Length: 205
Ligand code: TMP
Image 1 (cartoon, protein in one colour):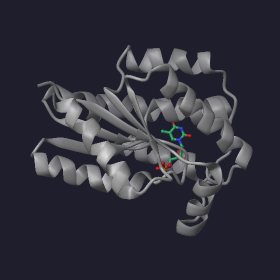
Image 2 (cartoon, helix red, strand yellow):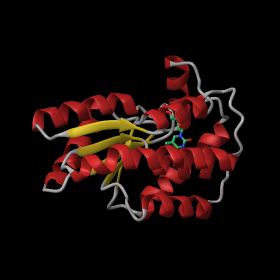
Image 3 (tube, helix red, strand yellow):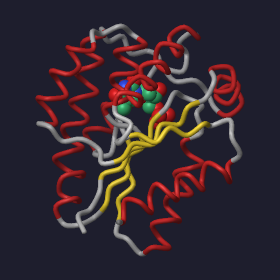
């Protein structure tokens, strides 16, 4: 069986970390070789870009920010994702290109067709086999962020930014129902993890 590339995405406060923990256990139980990684980041170059991107003091233009996301992604693909998949190791990434469409496109207003140009250039048609989209109403997400951490450069954005971000995520999932599993993050953790487990099982077939 070919190793699969799985991504997990959603607005800040959607609850990714809880479910990543569950996925790690799932792979461990199945004894499937897997790498868990994240974006922006996942490599030394990517993590350096991440620090810049998330620092509230960074003043990057919209286009520069978008290019930095894809620069980190290119390095991530070349150094981690493609080599792993080539040797039969599955890869689970905490965020991927959906986040650029949602945040830089939806949130900041970079035209989506310009992001598509970078996507084609960097990925050359490569896409996740499966994407879990954790969806949550804004109020819930914002409460979670406020309770759990100091806000980074993106988390400091206003509600309207996240409304647009969320709606791009949902549009993308709607347009490609075979690739996306939308998880309603207001459901119980047990229910969501059952759906996660079922979708992962299907990838084994
Ligand atoms: P996270 O690790 O908490 O998810 O933080 C990453 C932040 O970066 C999050 O606010 C979303 C944002 N982001 C983008 O704006 N564009 C991207 O392409 C990616 C991967 C993340």
